[in-house]
Image 1 (tube, rainbow, N blue to C red):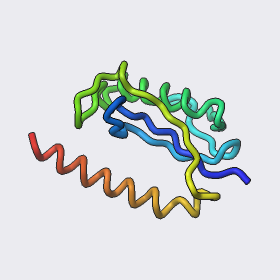
Image 2: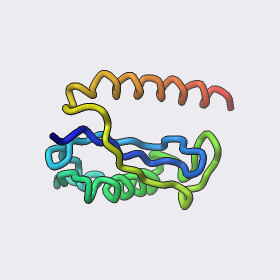
Image 3: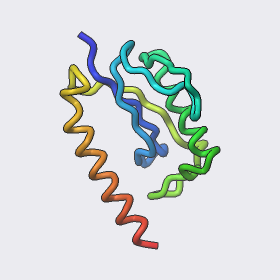
Length: 115
């Protein structure tokens, strides 16, 4: 049985997460490109590359910076890793993913307040 997978854009050696996308292989669809009406179905073969393209688009439209906000690692050092989670369904993963998202939002707010 297939498991929920997660692609993480990590800043490189320090492994701070810039962006993460959870998906069910062959089931989860995502917007092919920003502002596009076309979808792509994510699989282990394309999810990391999709996430990399998505991050590049976010940088291009200035939605995120091309450096890590924690350690300042520049975009060329970033890596994209696709790994299975322990969850068998997105519904099962939802609580843990939501809690992680809340914790990341708190961290971002604290870091923005440091400037």
